[in-house]
Length: 266
Image 1 (cartoon, one colour):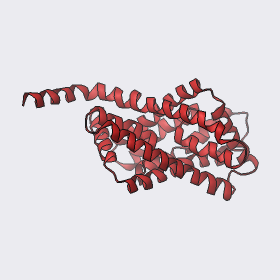
Image 2 (image 1 turned 120 degrees about the vertical axis):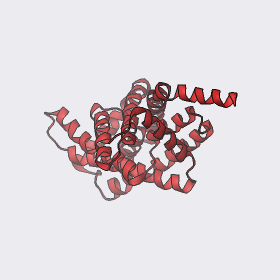
Image 3 (image 1 turned 90 degrees about the vertical axis):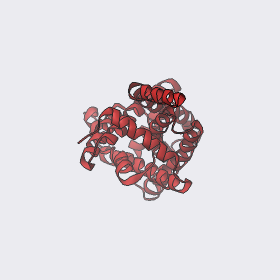
Image 4 (image 1 turned 45 degrees about the vertical axis):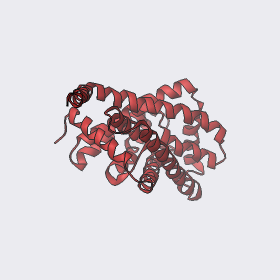
């Protein structure tokens, strides 16, 4: 009840093509949802782990990581457009010459904006206005996470982000290979749990937790921007190169070259 990696490559290329053809309204709605869904996952992580004993840091990390995947599960199964996943699906469609490079950039820009709006919506209204991370142990936990994110220098944050989106895009890849909802959930859960437990940096997750600290007056936008650019670039490399390009070269490059040759002969 699962597809081969070669078939997943075909599905990913087709997905990238379909995403490039979505209307602006659809991209904005689904992008907003995905940003909010990832934020819900992070909010759940904080609510579950805040105040737990610090004597077992590995267990606390695993506990938070075990609930965080709800964000990508909702994005894939309920419907959403997530920037980090699109960093794999759009490029692999471009590598296969199904879409233009301009279509890749256009999709990324729209989804980045929509994801950001969805993320800060949850951060402001649920974290700040509803008070779920505005005081006590939940505020302390959220601020500690945000400060740790921005404290990483550009280089380490960039490399961390590569590892993150390598795993996130593998979760998407495995979900495309699954043919029923239960299998898709398991396929998504393990790679996402791994990246969160390891502590890798995810640009959309950071769109939630760092603005959450900003809304509580604990950080500034100026502190956030260097982290944003480092993690954005690292996520692009992790998704587009380590998954999209790698699997295209492994499974589709020879096929694409043969098809081009056949067209020239014809």
